[in-house]
Image 1 (cartoon, rainbow, N blue to C red):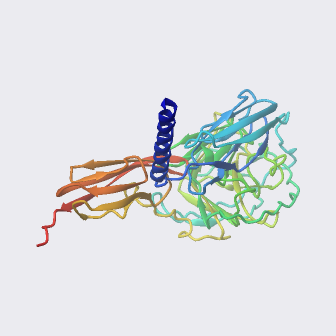
Image 2: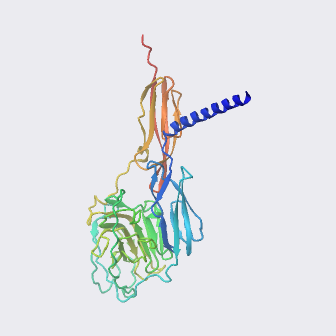
Length: 462
């Protein structure tokens, strides 16, 4: 008898658990799906000591689940990884990067890292001749106005460069021999165009550490300014700074035909180079760093105290037929006593060979407060009426949600779900607010949206 009673109790408890599980699943289904699988942009990365590579989540499964992840290296002495996924090669060896979903610790991906020995000496070509000095691009505007756009001039033979009036004297050109021009690079492999393509105009976010790579930290210091520009001070010859697209050529399709540089400078002229492959040396695409790099020794980034814009179009030498990176380098024998300083205002990649001023204007982004909306939110409700409301953003990915109600006229079912149920409890007025943490690119911001709801208690019908 006792065994029969215990058996029935056990079946009753199992039924209750099953009901609770089904009910819980129904509630959870209203939220964003849990991340089950993570696919990275690379499964294996090969780097030379001192070089870096940025990992990114290529896609997740389900597609609408969160892409937020954490990174961890199993051998930090060989390779480290930042919270943004930037791998830095420390010493020769092998390491493994583990990527874990923030929303589901069971969803993981691994990336193997192979670190090879760095080159014993920097690859600087032998010097043989004096570099030519290019013509100064015309500057048609005063500071504070829209800069003029100047097609980068061709290198012209100028015997000697003299000091410009009102500026500091530049080092004699005779002290700076010209390295020989590199051979035409091997053609860049072609890749199938993926679903995610690059925009027609790409504005480099100079405030992000991931937007540039300093090849010579000891010879080029970088300072971020409050207005979003960068000031680079070159104190050593051949120091260089690379600017590149958000992803490498393997996963990010582009057909950029030009890159525009807006800047001011003092102390001398600088050189530039274009890339048609990944700019960070060490990836399987970049190889030894020479393939796909096209330096111009004409020193076309000329000294100018007034804001100026230069456009560098793709050349016939660009084997890949497109531009994926821009390098600014110092070919002069400068020191800390006579540095060259350049303030970079903007760098813009364009699919046009000769973009206009309108093409180079950054897109107008919505105000942060306008980015968050509450979809299907009513302004009036009747007592006992319900409504499904959803938090949404115009730009970025939602990281977290918090609902709040001011007043007792309405209640909400869940305060931490993207979608929740609003119920009119009694006549009166209430304010419903949602605070959303949004990730836009590499930045995270928190914004709040509020709606006012009037609850009416209609008279009973006769």
